[in-house]
Image (cartoon, rainbow, N blue to C red; front, side, top):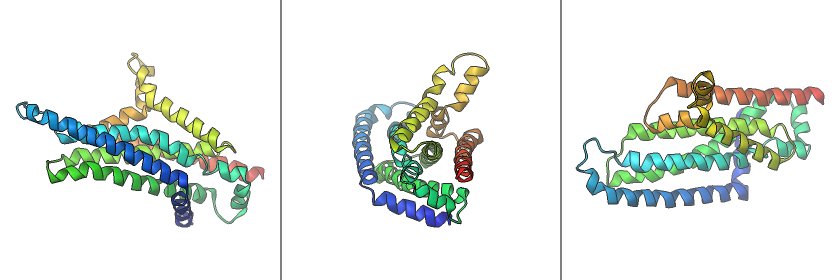
Length: 250
């Protein structure tokens, strides 16, 4: 049943003009930024040749591109997840789903998998840009794969948060704004991590950006992986619990 719901959700995304528009805008902006980064790298290439342990094309083109892509996803994902349950609640179709022989876990995971399939396609299209450079330069595939893994985990965490907040309201716009505010807050929370003591350490650990930056550097740490997996599982669990409460209430 999860697969059926996921396919239905993915199909509805590809039938939505909003999803296509967002995908086109993001790919267009990232392609433009990619060309600017490549042009800057070409200008620096001559000077970098005489520098020992100079950064390569992966550090100067691929990593900055993936950093910008993370900001794009921060704006894209709230718009993709805002209607998943809020629209169902607003149109009263969620009542039909809750009365159907489908568990709330299957509903949440099905919609989650559908959204993630769309995002994986988006990330794959982004990955084609730095991969195209292999025709002329040598890429550090380890760093590139680490960055793409980090971007995928970041997208998974953001989507889980968006799904949960979508269950809390009947207005998609409210869900989108709440998701954007939450994600932006967690993205910038490490601004206070310079403070000494437990509070600074905690805010640094909660930062979405801090863990993602480690992947961009090519560092694979089980702590960063566990953070994103636990983050996703926690918000998906909250979404399931919320739907269970709605089912009991009805």
